[in-house]
Image 1 (cartoon, helix red, strand yellow):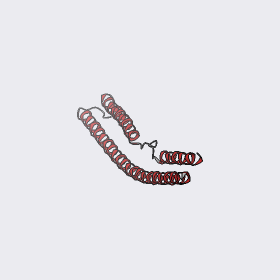
Image 2: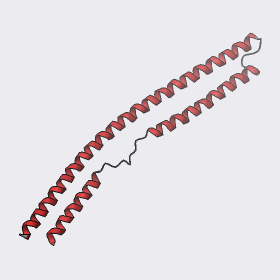
Image 3: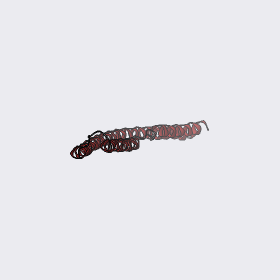
Length: 146
C-alpha cells in the first residue's frame, strides 16, 4: 500500500512539474510577444524623435539664414559692407547661437534616445519556472526514497 502512495506521489509530482513547465512555456511565449511589441514601439518612437530633430534642425537653419540675410540687408542699406564690422559681428553671433542651439538639441535627442532603450534585464520567467519544477520533482524523489 505504501508503494501505491509513493507511486501516487511520484505521478503527482510529475504532473505538477509538467504543469509548471507548460506554464513556463506559455509565460515565455507571452514575454516574447510583449518584447516584440516593446521593440516595435521603441523603433517607432525613435523614428518620431529623429524626424522631429531633423525638422527642428531645418527650422533653425532657415531662421539663421533669414536672420543673417536681414542683418546683411540692413548693413547694405546703410552703406556698410555686409560682411564687415558690426554686420559681421551680428551674423557671427547668430551663427554661434545657432550652433549652441543645435548642441542643446543634440543633447536632448541623445537623452530621449537613451530613455527609449529597451530594458534587456526584464526577466522572462522561464528559469524561475524550471527551477520550481525541479524543486517539485526533488520533493517527489525524496518522498519516494522515504
